[in-house]
Amino acid sequence: MHAQNHTYPIRVGLLYGHKPSGHYFAARALADFFPASVIEPVFIDLSEVYPNLGSFVAKTYLEVLNKTPALWDYVYDNDLVALAAKGLKTAIFPYYSGKLAEALRKKDLKAVVSTHALAALLLAKSGKTARPSPLFAVLTDFYAHSYWPAKGVDLYFSSGRTADAGLLANGVDPARIITTGIPVRKEFLLRGDARQKRKELGLAPDLFTVLIAGGSKGLGEIQLSVDTLKKFLGKLQLLIMCGENKKLCAGLEKKLAGQKHIRISGGFVEYPADHYRAADLIIGKAGGITIAETMALNKPMLLFSPLPGQEERNAAFLVKNRLAELAENPRQLETLVERYLRHPAPLAAFRRNIARMARPCAAKDIAAAIMERLLKTVDSGQ
Image 1 (cartoon, rainbow, N blue to C red):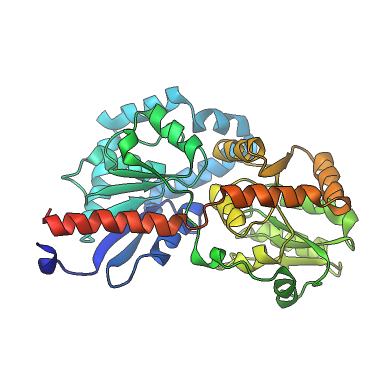
Image 2: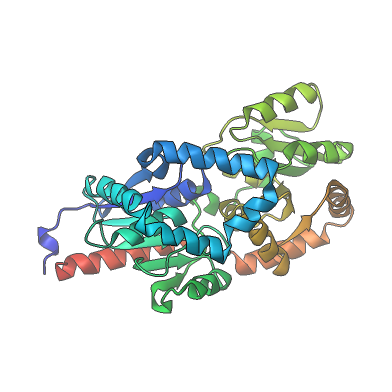
């Protein structure tokens, strides 16, 4: 037995794209379930390792989405593009892989968990001798796109069978895939009373409440959603989360000043679960973490303006499995909300389907599997 010679807690790197983001919240969710005496989580922001690359990618992403969204949809999960990207290993990849591996080595990590495909790809290319090992990868969407690497990852934690199929199509060994669901933070495991949460947030406790959310960056057609649903105020109330989109928040506050039955939440909300608990219906795009959090609280969701690429695929997954409906334009959004107000039975049906398919304990299951693997490694002296 070699465990007695090992220093606890074991330092494990949690690697994500940038903060705040769904990838970051997935890493946070895992840290929630690591016992402090066993695992010391070390958060690593990929954009800090590559500060220039990170800001360039983020800026390019937002500009492409704004100006030519169809291009992003084409690039995001195109096998030829993915193959070309992987082919860059002879030129660009060795530099970036080596830099990331070196940055992680300096942190004295015993393992790395990546919630970001690019980070997993870079580390997989660097090889086990160059970076901390083992390497775990956690998917945060319901589909696995072409950029998740086939080799170099010791264990994949997948959101479900659809994502499993994508990983298998990439060439991942099925023995390295564990189906767990998408991890959510502990705060989303406590249901709470919607009426009480509305009172705490300064909302009418007995009025049908719609939460409009655009993720941490306040993306999507939030303004259009508000404009479309204003006619129903009084029959419902709106709780709007603008994220870091200061321009959107300021515009809404100016336009809706003095308007009853509207509550605008500006700035990044560190602990948003209470906003979700207060809602009868959540309207937004289709980020994987947002969906998993909504499902953990058994809240019905109406999808509107999902971003091209993975969010559109997430939306298709929800609609196919009768977990949500998709409004493709403002008229459909208005029609669906009006229908829910008159006949709430579809919302109850969505909640039953969500209860059947939700995996609220995914983070706990992933953390347990990682600890089991690491403790076996320690006991064997590897």
